[in-house]
Image 1 (cartoon, rainbow, N blue to C red):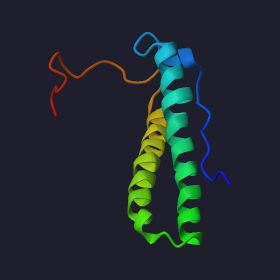
Image 2: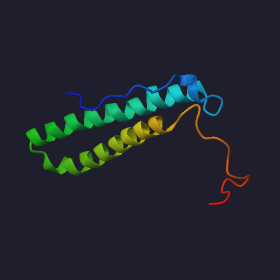
Image 3: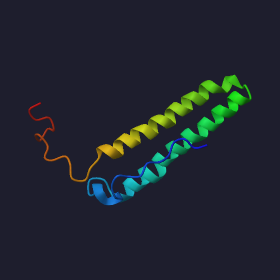
Length: 100
């Protein structure tokens, strides 16, 4: 019953090098992000089981666990879409603030 899936990266693991190494991208995508997806799907199954068995006392903790895993999944998904190998340009100033 998996509902959430690990999205494919919109670029190769090496696309953000040298700023972020291919190994770090692979670790965060294939391990960390995948663990959030698995955790969300596992928790959904546990919630369904708790409702079926009417073990209402466990639902609050399971909902918190689901929120944790879903936030990790959603934030990583946004992160992958916002990163680009050819973006950024030059900083505004040495202090990183410039003429804001």
